[in-house]
Image (cartoon, rainbow, N blue to C red):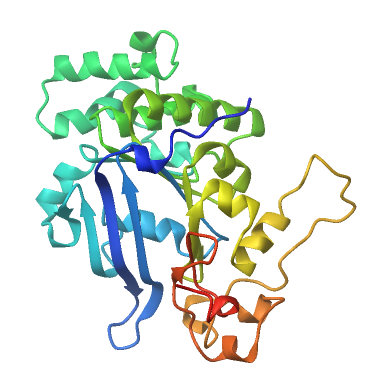
Length: 333
């Protein structure tokens, strides 16, 4: 099944999520480990934005920062949800926005669920925490499970996670994220732990639900095939920094950054015979050992001497979008 991305972001109104100059540090204060460096991104109402990159690029830690799920990390910059500054919220205030303003779906549904609690209790929990009565919470839990294709939802509410398949557990986790009617859904590698057939089912479900509810979605993934059929816009991260941002069509048709080109070239193709898959040489750097200059230069086929010294600035690319690459010095407007 081919999914079709929704209308262009220009047709949406309002900014649901605004991240500006976000830095995330771990480790000792006097010797910080910089995990994310100067990251900015906006997601409009009803828009779908994908955040892509290899493992260790900073995607998931950035997504988790939106809800401040890692208390041991030090966050600086700005994260605003519907105009509210998240980095200034107190713990009790954070509890009120988790689920109500933002829902989150994690990689492995089994590890996201409590094996000792019934499915119903876990789906109802976000409502009960926010003061909704038990009878109303139960009614809404049954409704959202039914919406997500859980057959005999009222009966399955009494079941435990081990009694559900991987795909059905992901539907339950999605129900937990949606039950409080958030404006933004963050899906962090939501299909990684599932087989290909179930992946397609979950993505189709996410596609339908986000359209029906007018949800803004931030999709964290390394699967560019998923991005092509789901997102409006793509941001590419490498070594904790954003290196490109563009519309799906333009990024896939003419990727400006060599790293983006490498990611796309590594995707298996069905329209041609491929005897050997293309790979990006080397591996992403550890956050504590980033190269000087452009962090991608040791792996880049187009690296110049300047790339080894100066960090490229993210700026408007000649063909549109944003790119951080010295190849365009003198061309960027």
